[in-house]
Image (cartoon, rainbow, N blue to C red):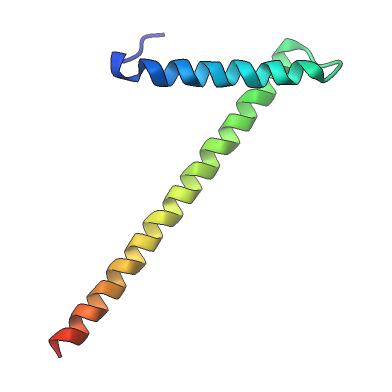
Length: 78
């Protein structure tokens, strides 16, 4: 895998967190290595989707604030 040098630390932290989560799943009996990796990948995918959703909600808030600002500007002009 080739990565941009400016993002190297981000990749290292991500790999460390992934390995930590996989290690946590070793405590669950009868789960093989492939299942541990899949469970960790699913967890981080859910976290990423949640962050995207939260971010999009933030964008909507900004739109609403801009509308409110426009209403205030219109009121001041009257």
